[in-house]
Amino acid sequence: MSQTPPAGEKLQKILASRGMGSRREIERWIEDGRVAVNGKTATLGDRALPDDRIEVDKKNVDLKAQTHRVLIYNKPEGEVATRKDPEGRPTVFDRLPRIDNQRWINVGRLDINTSGLMLFTTDGELANKLMHPSSNIDREYLVRLFGEVTDEIVQRLLSGVELEDGPARFSDVVENEEDSGQNRWYTVCLMEGRNREVRRLWESQGIKVNRLKRVRFGPVFLPSYLRTGQWVDMDVAETKSLYRQCGLRTPELNMRQPRERVKSKRQEQKLRSGGRSANRH
Image (spheres, rainbow, N blue to C red):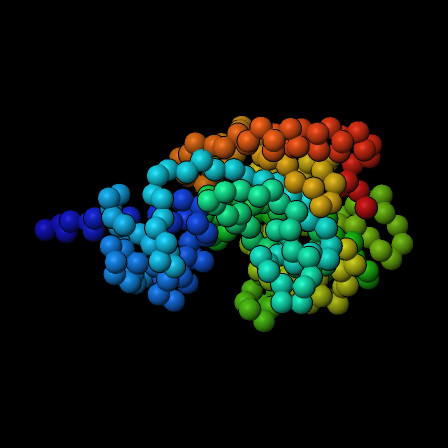
């Protein structure tokens, strides 16, 4: 005899879809006792219905459907991928546009010495899907290496090596044949985003990484005109494609407030008039 499925949706899914944060972050809030449903402190696994009253830090949450945005950001070296840094270093959130009643959620991270493409969204469900290993979304990087890269090293990195946190491998390694000398540029791809994984893979073979830049995340490429430290809203077609790849229904999209639209348009025109592509080092 089949059981009736529990009523409502999980709290972390509801709050993530309202732009409160990523599912993982909200799960920590629940564990810390910061979330309540109808006046009762919630626990992991709790669900809620549309007419329930949900509070975070004793403040009511508006459960009406939110509009969402996705940003492409070209991260410079020297910024940390956290909301606040105890050492006072600049963060990737410092340059993002301000939004009301929502928060930007970073899709994965880049370490302080890595530059390039980062995605930010107000949709916690989308962020969760993009970061989850089951989505099989690949990442592409440009990497400058110091040392002799032999065919045997490349084959080992493609087959897989054992790192301190488990096996890892590149799905593709391509050399820039125009380079010469000891510092050579390569394009590499991998299917996950563990901490410093690209660097650690090369270092396991005695190869030093001098520069590292992410240029693609799944179907999203870093625009050639987007300079470091600049952001741009992903257009509607790209955003819908991203939702489809994650198996999610596309929500209502925020087409930006007039002031932000003008700012972004001027920014893009300024960037496009800048001349050379930012993708070359």
